[in-house]
Image: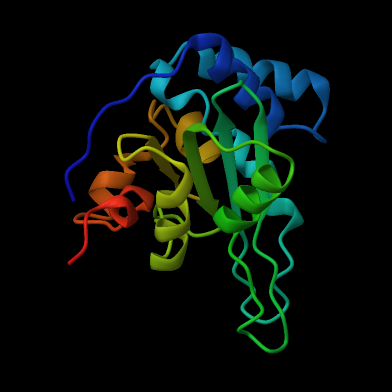
Length: 185
């Protein structure tokens, strides 16, 4: 998969970092935010997703996923996967975040990060990719964050193992709302 570097404004990155560590001590959150702010601007916003996975309801798969969207207006919307005994009723973290945002009137986004508990970055599933396609630009940055991101940063791995991509790269030749406007025979 090809990757592209994206940059969000530093103030947005700092807000995302702080939001990621809500619920931890303020001293720790401040220290982590200060450290991440010294890194490439691209990676400073990904920590916001770490908190989102803490609220996952995954009693069947035991696979926690957290997602955080950054709206065009600067709001951070967090989502976690919510499983259901019928499995088909399960909703992924990315779709949870989108549904929360859209149901409150937010429909424009400029970034997404996804995190799990596994040590390799995991991408959104196919269904989530298509739902993201409905509301996000193809060039929107998507950050896939490994579950051991904090440990990697503590070990001096500045990017924490984050993989950067875009919706265009994850969903090539996609079908979107504009396709419904094409002339038909």
